Length: 198
Image (cartoon, rainbow, N blue to C red; front, side, top):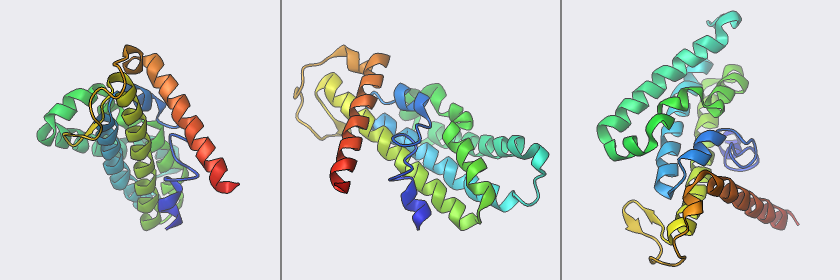
């Protein structure tokens, strides 16, 4: 089970390994955006990691990366089609970042560094843990940006905070706001980690 917890804690893809920064900064204007992109990444990692692990003995090392990218592209295409069919509103919001999951460094890194060297169950648990950690991070950054930008927080259609808790501020919806929010959240995570250790 260490594989599962690693992605939520000491090897969190966003807060510790700094993987997947483009979608982290681009789509996290709201908590739900980060959550659903994270769900897509969980699905892709849960499909590709065990497949890479199963096929590692039959894929020649000279074509290892292209083979991994082909597996990842197939999984991303399936997830993209699921979102298009069942979540058309979120599909439109996530835009190009959903199909770009094919080249997300988190997914490629886990295929290369873990799944290709471990048995299928460990690879699946690693993918699930990394996906959950990524989802948690994106949802947190998106939630903070949503609160700071508009003074509200909604998830699943329900408002989690009363409206107007902060006055609307445009900068938090723009790219500089994404960088500032990530820095603030990272500072908070580091602070809490130090407090728990000390």
